[in-house]
Image 1 (cartoon, rainbow, N blue to C red):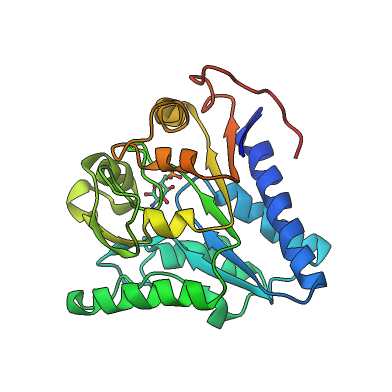
Image 2: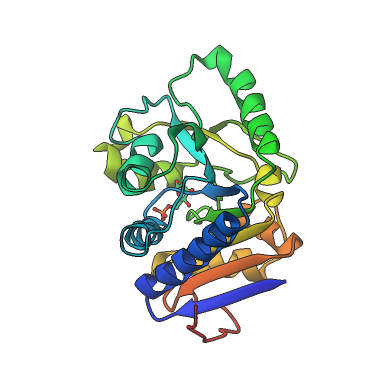
Length: 257
Ligand code: GLP
């Protein structure tokens, strides 16, 4: 069942998502079972990660039994570069919690091009061997991309090398100093990979996401709006702030976690 929750601001939305993730992690720990999280980068999940770090530090939530798979990485990209998603994840989350290094998976942007297909097949196999993704966290790009699945994209795509849309390159340019230094390719999990997650939470903050969020939720499912594929599966929860939800026809105002 699709769920849309609208919060007054991104901080409240981020806290609600973090609490949901923390409860899942805790429940699995009590059952002595691992939990597999699909993680996103970009500005959207930063508040979620901050809150998870706070919960770890103040409430003692352990991530020892948590396995993570990140959605994507720029290509080419050295993991040690401050613009890499590998660095982003360590800076915002991993270096502040007790997750095991061997449980962290992020697409490798430093591979030789001819090694990428085998790496991508291996990434899919690692997700399957881990038991599949329990909870996938997503943001949405202005092109409607989830992960780096740019339009047009088909529903059966899996992990692979992709070209970035010009709008995405423009949006990323601020992090790279200029468009000429911004990567034009990335390794991303596919739409099919994402759709196999047992639960999906997709977050969106701010007015500049309102138009694409309306299309993703209300327009017909279309390869030109990658996030619209989320309409075709159950257990998708949209967590928005008021600005991001502003163009929806029906805005279900609620703000409980
Ligand atoms: C990036 C990431 C996506 C992210 C999106 C939105 O390029 N690859 O996973 O959801 O673009 O970015 P932001 O959260 O900064 O708006």
